[in-house]
Structures are given as structure tokens and as C-alpha cells.
Image (tube, rainbow, N blue to C red; front, side, top):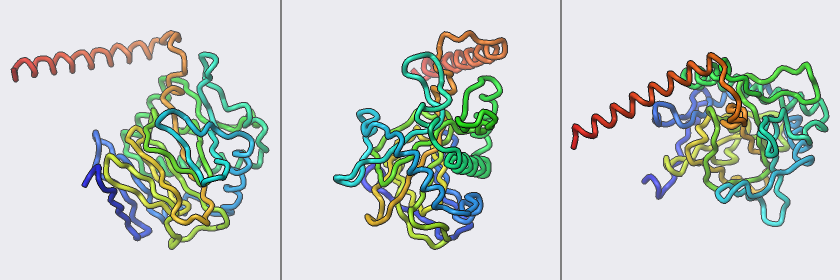
Length: 295
């Protein structure tokens, strides 16, 4: 029953994915078919990915309390490793930073691994996301010049097409929470000690949606596209001896908004803003009329 029990549905067919009934016209999550995830991942040394993530996490760890409802937990007595990389809103000025200062010290070969992984997420996004989701990001980019993640150590590096940030933690689990992300986010799992993943790998963690009453089992290498504005959480790992890295690729709404409300609208933005205002006004007037008729 929703709200009391979590239902775990799985599909062992590597050519079939896993999804759920649409919420507000969009699927709340889509787990890519296992075979597709492994094909996109281009398996040529999974240990390189884990090593790059570990090196990055040693340079800077996030606070264990992101807010009252976003607490990060790990193994008892162990130091929690959780890190955020990519573009981020400045806390001291009206701007969006290309990256956190500590990321500028990350060696270039690790940067290449991270960017390659983010490109894999892009291919997953384009392969499985609903058309309106992709269109939403595409048209927003045409109107607002928001930043997406790129290599800070290489000025000639091209920015990513969709995602602005990468957050990850080793052996962590989080309380149920929501995120103010602009588009569908991507969750991804890696397991230390395996240089190549297979179709038959064991489930290592569960990605849960308590308000939907479902949990999605994830094997190492799986990609899960999900709506971060629906309450979600990550379980503790299934096997204590495993060392897993839980990743999330995202695009923050504050980044798309450029973190500055004093910016003047250009001509195109002003026209679109007026159109939006007219649509909302008409919807509110229509709603008022229906309320009066019903009363």
C-alpha cells in the first residue's frame, strides 16, 4: 500500500528497462535497459572512473548536512566522502561559477574520465527521456545562456549539452528529499574492484520513491533518469563489504536562472515572458469562472 510499504519491481531482461505511470504527464523515472547502460558506458576500465571520483572526493567534501531534510549518512565511525563538482551558484555574488575552486587542482587525466562519464549520461538522456523533456532544455538554452559543466583545466574544452553538475559519495545514503532541478536528473552507480560490469551483476543499492511506493534496484553501471522534484532517497548498500559510489548528474534551476534577478531581459526573453504571463492570466480567469459556475 502506498505510504506504508515500498514495492520493488524488477525486470531481469537486459533489453528492457523499468519505469512508472506518468506523473503530471511525465514519467517520474526510467531505468535504462541493462544492455543499453553497459553499451553506452563504453567499458574500458571501470577502475579509472572510481579512481577519478576518489581523487576528487579527497580534495573537497561537502557538509554532511545540506539542509534539515538533506542529511548525508555513511558507515558508523567512517569519514563520509561526498563531493559536488561542476558549475555552481556563488554564495557571495550574483553569478554562476564555472566550478568550485578546488576542482581547478584536479589532474587533467581525472578530468577527462569525469567528462567522458558525463557524456555517457548525455547519451542516456537523449536515448530515453521523453521528447518534451529534451525540448524543454533545448529551448531554454536558446533563450538563456546558462552554463553547463566543462573541464576547468582546459580553456578549449566544450561544455556539456545538458548537465551542469556532478554529485557523488562513497558508501553514502540520504534522507528522503527533493531537489530544485531544472530537468530530469541522472543517477548512476559504480562498484570498486570490478574493472568490467556484466549483465548478471548483483543489485548493490536501491533508489527509492516513498510517495510513489516503489524502489528501483540498481546494479553497478546502471543509469536511472528521474524527476528530482519527486521525494526520493538512496538506500544503504546491500552488501557491507562492497565499496560503491553513488552519482547524480543534474542541472540546477538557480543555474538556469543565472543567479541574478537584476538582469535585464533581452527582446526575445521579454516577448516570451509576456506570452507566459498572458497564458497564466487566462488560466486563472478560466479557473475563477469554473469555480463561480460550480458554486
